[in-house]
Structure formats: structure tokens, C-alpha cells
Length: 165
Image (cartoon, rainbow, N blue to C red; front, top):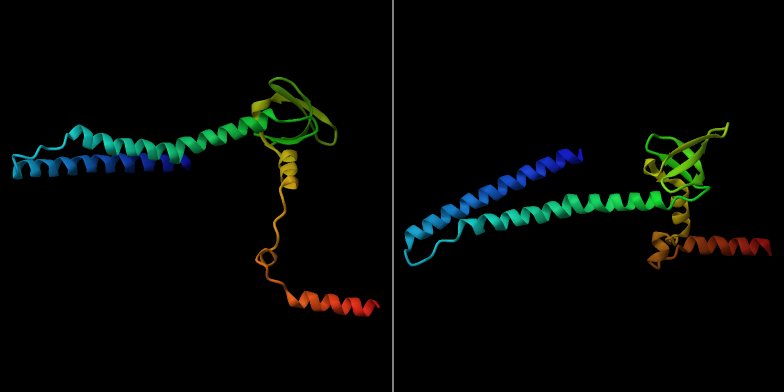
């Protein structure tokens, strides 16, 4: 899906830059014909500007996010610890028993089967995600963070306090 989108974007931007080049060169020819004193724009410059814009857009839409995802994946794979629950690219779920330089040993199943595999095969670290979620500050409810107080809760609390006395 992403490759199709990339191909469509590339084709669209290439077509647009070509159309801009031909339009600018047509206007430049008309301007040169209309006035001999004016100097026509360099067609090379009118082609380079849209092409440069194309590469900038391509970088920010496709190359930069892909590099960011790859960096996060490498960081995830290098931060695996013994005792973490991980999921591999093949779908195997297991607990890390041993970590070496470029391999790990997973313990899977009720029979405690051990599997040795490469670090690059780790797709997700479930334990690290749970630790990050627990460490993140909890958000308040929408009404409480806006400063809106529900009066019915206060009334029910007062009734409970009176009933207990």
C-alpha cells in the first residue's frame, strides 16, 4: 500500500514539475516575443526549482518517516532484557531467557521449549510497552481537566455520609 502511494506521488510530482517547466517556458517564449528588451528566464532554472521542491516533499513524506521507524525498531531490538515478553516477526511469542551480542534465546509454550534466534527477528517487546504505559502519567477525565465538577456526585457522597452516621 505504501509503495503504491509512493509510486503515485512520484508520478504526480514528476508530471506536475514537467507541466510547470513547459508552462514556464511557454510564457518565457511569449514574453521574449512581446518584448525584445526583457531577458527570458533560463529554462534550466525553471526546471530545477520544481524538481528541488519535489525532492524536499519526497524526503519529508517518505524517507524521513521510514528512517525514524527503522531507528525505533533497532532501538527496541537492542534494549531487550532477560525476562521481557517479545513477539517475533514470525509470530512466536516468548520470554527472553538469554541475551547475547546478536542472538537471543526465547522460552515458549507450556513445555518451556527454548528457541535461539537473531535480534533482528524481534517485532515487538510487550513488556517494554507495558513498562512505558505504566510510567506515563495518567490523564484526567475530560470534565475534571476542564474544571467542570459533576454536582450529582457531590450530592450522592453527602447522602452516603449522612446514612453512615
